[in-house]
Each structure stands twice: as C-alpha cells, then as structure tokens.
Image 1 (tube, helix red, strand yellow):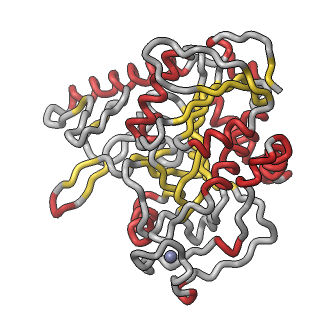
Image 2: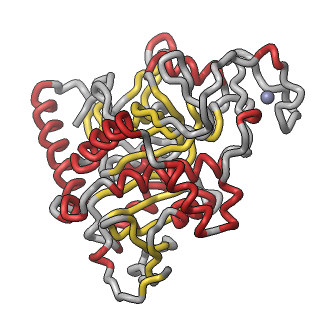
Length: 373
Ligand SMILES: [Zn+2]
C-alpha cells in the first residue's frame, strides 16, 4: 500500500495531530495510502507518519508519550510547522469527554467538532482567566477561528450528512478490513454506555461501575443503531482532566460546551485548525478507558470524511498556516494598539502566566469577557 514516489516536505498540506498512540493508530488506519518517511528538520523532535487521504498529502504527529496538555500540543505543532512550511491547516483529532444535555444527546462514540459560536472561535480555554472580587472567575482571551476552507467544508459536510447520512461506518469498516488487528477499535456495546446523574459520584476505590447504583442512571431513549452522531459546537480545552459531573454541568451552563479536552487551546493561535473529538466518556467520576479506541476511530473517520469532500486545489490555493498565523498576530497587534489608545488603565499584551503556561503567538486582553480577534 506504500507508494514509492518521492515526495518532499513541501508536498504536505494537512497536519494531523494526536495526543495518544491509540489516536495515532486510528489516524494511520484512515490513510488511503502510506508514504515513505521524510526526515524532520533539525530541532524537530516529532515522529511522523505520512500518507494520503483523498486529494491531500497528510503528515501525522503524536504528542510525546505521557506528556499531554496545551503546552505539549503547542510544541508539537510549532515543530511540525518548522519542518512542513507549506501546511495549510491542522486537524486535532482524538478523544474527549462528552457533555450531554437535553439539547445535545451525546453518547459514547459520538463525534464533537469545533465550530465558531457567538464570540468564540470554536475552542474555549476554560481554565485561563483571573479570579476577581468575591472569588468570581473571569475568563480571558478567545482563540482563533479555524480557516475558511475548513469552515466551508464543515458547512458542506453538515448539510450532506443531513441529507444522506454520514460515511463514518464505511470508513471504520474499511479500516478493519485493511488492518485486522484494528478489531480492538470496534464498538464496545451499548450496555457499557452508562450516563449517571451529574450529582452521583463514582465510589472511590472501585475500578469499574459494577457497584454503581442503576437507579442513578439517566434514562435515555435507545437509538435505532450504534452509528455515531456528529455534534457541532464549542469545545472546552484546559490543562486539567475533567472528571466531575457537577462541575461539567456547571461549565455547560456557563459556556454551552459540548466536550472537554486537553490540547486544542495550545494549537488554535499557532496553527489554524479544527478540533475533532470522539466521545470516550462523560467527563465525570465514572470515566474509564473502555471506549477510548472506538472513540479515537470515530473521530479519525470523521476527519477522513471531511478531507474527502475538500478538493485538493481548494487547499493548495489558500495561504499557508504560517502566513495565516502571522496575519492574525498582526491584526491582533493592531487591535491592541487601538485599544491601548483608549484604555490606558487596562493591561494588554502577551501573557505568560506564573503557572508555567506558555502561549504561542496569542495575545490576550485583560478587559474581561471573551474577545474575538
Ligand atoms: Zn461509576
């Protein structure tokens, strides 16, 4: 399946980033064709996989083992961009904790895709801000929107899925046929999809939910099939693992997010990208790893479905990710200059918080409330 044709770094237009080896395996399982490995440039420590999906040459990188979070994601993205300078956009593809609500009946294995909503670009760094009077937490900054070529494709795909249904099951099936060991990536069975009431915490010391009370389960209509649903909206990104139902629901009320994850906030301002998350748990204390592989596969299948509807020339005709990021930075600087003229008392500029969080290329304004740049 590997193609012997020689390609150069400049031939790769899509950067696909994952956080876990499971997600990297799912990404590779979705490639239509595998390419020979190209050496990274100096000071690039990433390990890459190369291949093609539809019209696009795709380079895949995974975060270093055991190092998750927004900083690690930003480092991987920056190194990727230093080697592959012609990349047009990125896809952050992997698993996340779903936030079910009456409006969004999210189940395990479903896919959540970041989509600009209100003043947010699709991803909210929910733990970045300041605590002010009466202990109130004020969130600051807003992360960039994905590039237009992705947003257009997203709208087209959403419409296509409404009319014809999605092709995720087909891509999952094809992956299993090509790689028989990927049977581990199959649907675990709906009997293992249990959503407990937000206030009901998992008993400490118990590995599984076997001893959790059935009366505390949320009553949900069975679905006609196990095919995943796709949900579009805001994704909450932060450096802590969310595993508390009541906090999840509080943030759902405040921010209307559909999913929690731990990397996207590190990418959005240094690498124009879309975030695609397969739901592997409900971001509560009952979370376990049973659904991780299947959720990684459904997210990767959605990414493939998306790339397959974008014509190659539409991507090569757009500015590179590096150019787009430079332009965003300069727009953001202009905006800040304007604001500084009018708001002498407000601090404005690059933040590097004492907690050791580094932000790459993003500027944040402390005026309070979300801002879109
Ligand atoms: Zn439990």
